[in-house]
Length: 140
Image (cartoon, rainbow, N blue to C red; front, side):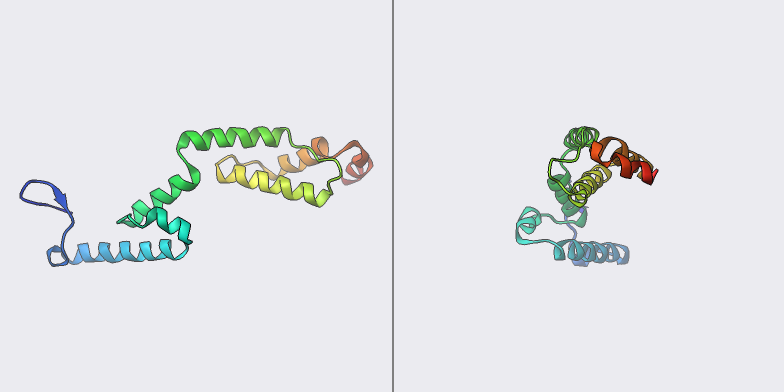
C-alpha cells in the first residue's frame, strides 16, 4: 500500500514496487493459490472478494470456527456431552467407540485435549454397560 495525494492508503502498482515488495506479492499470490485450490464453490463464494491470503484465512476461520465466544460455548457443550457420554441401547462397541472418538476429536480441535488414559478410564468405568463388567475386569 502507498499513500496517495489525499493521504489515503491505496494499492501500489507493479511499477511502484521494489524487490522486497515483489517477493511479498509473490508469497501472497502463492498462499492465495493454495488456499483457493482446496475450496469448493460454496466456500469460494465466501472469499472471492478477499484481496490477501490473510483475509481469505480470516474469513474461512470465522465461517468455520466462529467467534471466540462461539468456540468457547461449543467447547462447553461438547465437554458436557463428553461427561454424559453413555453407550446407547442396541449400539455395538464399534459404533459407540466411533461416536466417542468423533466427540473427543471435536474437543481437541477446540483446544480441550483429553488424555488417552482418561478416555480409556471413562470408557471402561462409566460408558460400558454392566453386562461388560467381567470383560472390564479381565482388561484391568
